[in-house]
Image (cartoon, rainbow, N blue to C red):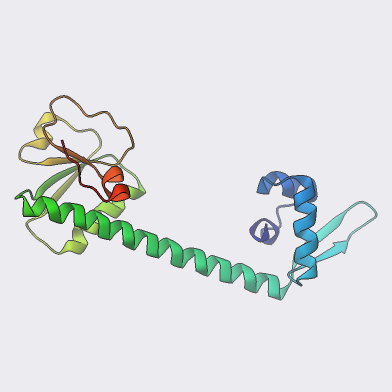
Length: 172
């Protein structure tokens, strides 16, 4: 709610309700609580129109929430990287050091960061949009999609989403 108000995007409670996904009654209740806490001022522009303004305390609260969100994101990414590294370490113990990562996106970038963070030159990771048989010569396919379909020519693969969420390393 504070983010929507800070952006100055809400013309009225109905617009604010739509933008936040809350009911109109809940929006009204939250606005009243924000005013009572001193985070928000309501200024009457005319008989039918009001303006919502964040107070300095409201801006401070918004900054704190943004900071906490950023810390939570950093901690989550660090934990995901560590779990990916653990999965790859297990494969290293088995003698596998060549990996092909199929796809693109934020998660794939995290996988690359995890591999670089291992500081193990023998671990090789190649990213491909779509895997072909020639990509997998002496390499294990890493996927990052739930319920992804694996081509028949793939001998061994690891679904990283499953592996890091369950803590188990199941490869086929």
